[in-house]
Amino acid sequence: MKPKVVLYESFEEKKSIAEEPVRLTDQEAFARVLDLLDFNAALSAQNENPVVRNDDLDNIQWIELKWHE
Amino acid sequence: MSNELRESLRKLCEALNQNSVQCMLVGGVAVGFYGYERQSIVKDLGRPELVHDIDFWYNPTITNFTNLVQALKTLGVDTESLSDYVFDPNKTFLRIPFGTFRAEFLPSMPGLESFTTCFKRAKRIKFDGNELVIIGYDDLIVNKKTLGRDVDRQDIEQLQKRNPRGPQP
Image 1: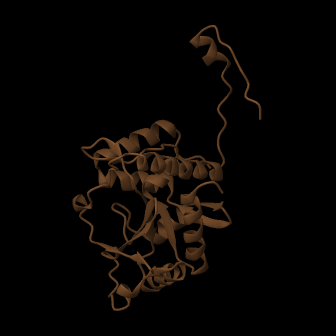
Image 2 (image 1 turned 180 degrees about the vertical axis):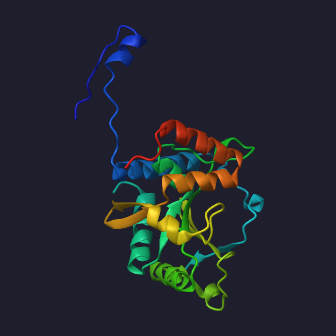
Image 3 (image 1 turned 90 degrees about the horizontal axis):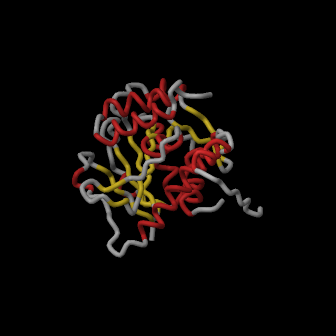
């Protein structure tokens, strides 16, 4: 789809002609959450020193499972 | 299908459904579903986390736990360490790494007593061919209130701003 170019005289004008918000379906809302998580993970991975949470702060005794080799 | 996380989650949910595992999505993903897409930040470091958690609350019965272990086994997870394990409905928390996220299975949720009751009230959606169950809005708020951490209070505030009339059908 070709992007539509809209020019505004002022910020107020932009707000006034903004399209009505559209409510996402449940599926779309969920897909969006996953897209955002994926995007954030990709972004974080670009850090030279990626930050990984310190699980020592977690008071749950997790059973950490691994994948078969 | 556009992202790795979504494909991994599809496979996981397919295995859970095929093995009749009763569980529902809770935590940050549920918060995002109800309208507040919060990025997990590492406390005191002010930077996003590399790996996100996707939390599931599972029905803490022996049968359901056995089904869960079977589902994980069919996916290729090494469940050998659980072969002699004595299931504890209060303490059996499982964590499985999935590349960019960790799937966490919790047997209990603070503030919520009955899995079965919450399961009946939960939201059900069809997603990538699987049924996904997401904790109900009101139950999520109760859980967050009970947890009461800064991040939970922020979640409640933002969710209530976005859902001033409560959950929409």
